[in-house]
Length: 544
Image (cartoon, rainbow, N blue to C red; front, side, top):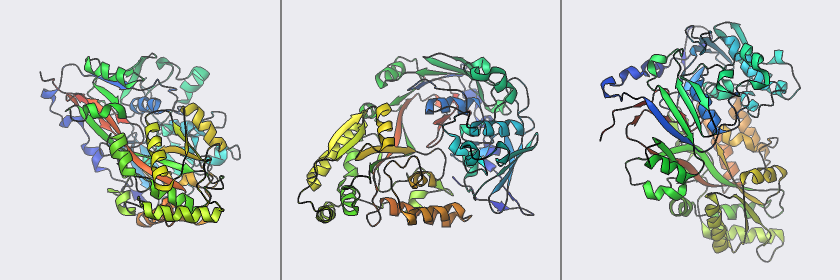
């Protein structure tokens, strides 16, 4: 979420974060605290890696986010606030960021956190030998992409530790949301001496790494991750929890059982269980910066037809999917970018327009007949297959199948497969229609759009449109937030709108649902990035 900047004297812009000054647990009434500051969470999977350059899953990200800290972190209102940085100066062209680091910031072993730790970590993630799957998140930096792809040198990457407490970052293009990017785990610092000391064993166990965040890892087993307060954290006085137990429970009934038996303080719910708990006082619903949609493969001759794609999109009843099939708080999607992403304190959806597509069966039928005529077909094709996940989303796929049959007479076959089989097929283009999704890593709507550039490895449907790419380029180059939003809205409408390409069919905006004890306070959940922040959480006195 971009923050407004105020001009300072000279050719720099200085960020002032009032929130960072007031985000203190000191405001909490200590007399209301429980004597036992232990929080017990549940996660759906085990961690895959504790190396911030190599992690690949959200559970690892959640843990890394709470035991480490970048230049910035997401605050209580999902805006970047100061972390290890205490000041940032931004050039007028928004291409040079100069960070001043806190002198009091230390690692868990008492060594100071320096600008060199950030330079080392970022360049290590970009090193082709590291094989970081998220190295692309650093590509806005000068020379980063070239180095990562073996076409440039490490010395050409635009990040430089001028001294122990000054880090200068040079970007390829103006980046209005770069501060949000620095909250990502790939942007966390790493200690060169520790990484080199342990080599391939680095981060494989809690004692083979160091931490600079609110907590440190005490132990890791397949069943549980235990964190404890980091007494060397620069803002340790703000941290109230002494211990956090993260219990791994893959299936929802198990998580609910742990919750009901008093062994867990929170439990994530799946769609099947929401209706049983939605009216209880422990139920929480969190809007996510995540969208579910259907990709229409333009390698397929039928789906290459504009009118066929428009017909399919207009035939979908998103209200039925959200309110009668899912029933978990998910919202019908009239566009691609979800409302949970904000621009200058206002939802991007409100600025760009709420709906670029909505159900209209009569119009869908007209488009469909016109498309069939253009294809030389006298009746609907019977060869199309919809690839879907084999989880609760298969019920959405069934609803889509039914809606297309009833509205258009179009029969699609369903193929529900596990994710590990689905993604390779998408990469090869082995699908006609496929259900897919995107979850925002950071607070910029462009993240939902740039993956549909013709050269993107994630553009499974092989969408190509020069005007779309021209609009994205203009959005990337402007330093005016209002103009950027306008360009993005135009590109989005072209991608999904009825009067555009209708290349992608929006379905719904996602939510997460939880059970959480009333005595768990200030456990902040984020709509994008890491799912939760433990820094400000505490346990209040439990009422009988």
